[in-house]
Image 1 (cartoon, one colour):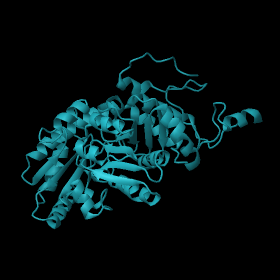
Image 2 (image 1 turned 120 degrees about the vertical axis):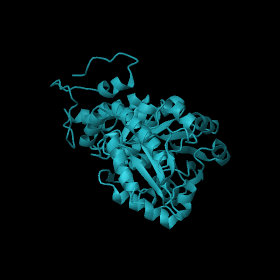
Image 3 (image 1 turned 30 degrees about the horizontal axis):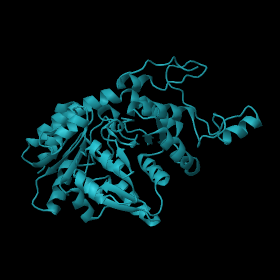
Image 4 (image 1 turned 90 degrees about the horizontal axis):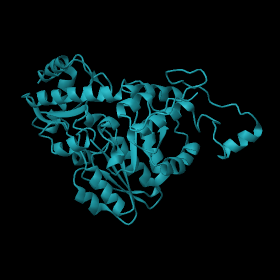
Length: 403
């Protein structure tokens, strides 16, 4: 019992609630959760056709599930993409991308400022199989252009970056990639389609960690790739069938529920983050604040143009220190003296989370890699939630007072 066809040109807020609502024969208003590992076939002939890909229909949960399909369709609609494929985590989405697109001898260009695990996966694990990786400045388009080789297959960027919120020029990087017959992949985890739709700016593929803002309450793990139907169905689909980084139906259902409030959460949390960043800039114990919504941010104008005028919900700040050792000690003092915010390396939650990137999310990188990415021992990342702003200021003031 499918819903009536939706009108065209709906706003993203409406798509987040109404897209891909495929009702069963019972007419439920909330998406059903199909918890099954296999599907009964009407006859052997139909089963043979479905397993051969000659007829649509569900056969085995690793290959498809109605709840997962609903989540994929809705996220694709939000991103303005032709199709989407969901995975068990954000990192498994990147793994699926690499397995589908790269082979020995291929070359990838990445920003120095990528998430630590992404750097380890692409630059480390895939190097074992003959994939070459060049790392360049996130914000210097000329460096991306200079790194192009005849065998360059992908340009991979996240924008804003984790944790320094550096912003790349998506349109410019798309032009660089396409001039060399390469693909531009954008990790849109921080901004989400509410603030930024990279495909509309020329990106070929979008990566998501649904664990973050798509869920929004720190409950489940999920990932996704959004792009053309040819990439999703013909390139990544066969790899998924064999490799099985499958998203569970329960987690897909949680993401579906999270998407319904994504727009209102991102707007509210972005407003909170801007106010908190402005307050932090005025604190004497703070050396520097990193947030795209601040006029002091090097890519402020670009971020406001690309991100619907909002800076997102993540900021970072450095506490004052005379040495890296004191920077780490002071950062730990600030974090340990807080009483309300959570010390947690996740982000995207309605609860405000603080983390020390140099020893957690980027702790497996070498000191040289951290320095290239600009991650100091004095740096603290804050993923701003939905608590009252006055309470957040008071708690961070309590932490800063420890210095």
